[in-house]
Length: 342
Length: 272
Image (cartoon, rainbow over all chains, first blue to last red; front, side):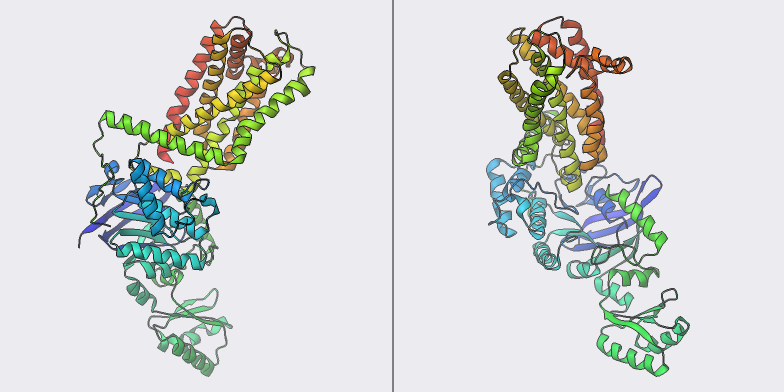
């Protein structure tokens, strides 16, 4: 397989904050790499370096064999970028937005118009094409933004959190659009905070935390590290935590994780979730350990983090709210995120 | 899509200086056309560039004007118009700062910077669009001024020079605002900061009242600051009077402002 994107030992600090502490990754041509991590992990900084917007302190980046640091002008012909917000001019219509992009890629007027029409058709925006794009729904705006990033027919496309802020239905719609692109063979690097999204879209996943790569693999491999579905409960009497662990250890694909502070136990139970749930109830009952909030869920980014690092990801959860992180970590990663997003 | 070569897009990686110039100007014109299109579609922008200056003309002409004693040929309205033109030109620069800050927030500038277009186009294009906006504002104010009694007393040539000076003054302030927009990157911050420096600078000047009517300590500032120097020169051009020394001083000030703030703005654009 040919490598489309090769990143080696990327480092970048903003003042005292080390946003990237040696990130390496590679994307094979025609595949999708998901860069997974919580807010402030350094995802946007990686994208900015790869798209020629930011110079790293050290490291190297090659896109389609082209040195990004030595020849950014050439690289700009090869890439497309859709950032975290829809970078479209809301007062202009969808068509105008795309035509202007075409003109800025130095297409002549009629080619710009043809390209705009092609993209409107492809992203199901023909009907809305002549309305100001501020009248579009969030999902439509994101589709238009994605269309705009494709005007220059990039061979490598970068999508920074393509579904953040979308409602679940629009998110699923966006996934469909992205999968179609991939089927046509576009090389894609996307960032996300959601394991589920990386699972649906990415061939390879790179998990980063605090500017470092902490895991690489397919989504199956990452889930195996968590142990598949996750069974979680809180022990009412914290002194019985060890008893609870013994009661569920047989169900577990991996070592159950205990959090003495919150008296929470989480167990990877593979794909036998429902059976495991019943067995857990039976076993806990037979040793007389009382539990609360027994639940079974599919592994999330938090679970992957818990399994790999032993601590929860201090980022946004599915609702976009700050969740679960320890206080100290939360504030450091939040302040870093502000720097990174600036 | 991967194997499909970029067919219809000119792949210029080794730009000659002629290519650079051609694409540089072409890209800037496309950006400016886009900025003007946006401006035309936002009622608030039209309000600030046209309605607000007109309200200022009427307010000072008919409400405050009677209480302000000046000694120029046609009375207060002749004194007022050069001041109003300069002030409106300066206030038009809010649009520059807000526009740039907004585009940074939306990620538009990030996208442009990741594209094979001229690096200078976003700033240059915006300055071109803003200059066109300024000219429209200046002409509208002039028309309203004529309707409420303003007249040139020094001939057509100096009159045109006066309008030109007002416009170039506006462009210079736009350069400062562009820098502010790129540094603050936030619409609200840019707006309040713009008020914080533009209000004192334009009001504590000879724009609306003779500097001599201010307390002594304030006169020290009001007399020597560039807004007063430019407005006095505009007045001399419109109404007659010695204009050479003021013309040189104004030119030096404007050149200095532009020479300092364009490089600053370009530098922060690269770092956005």
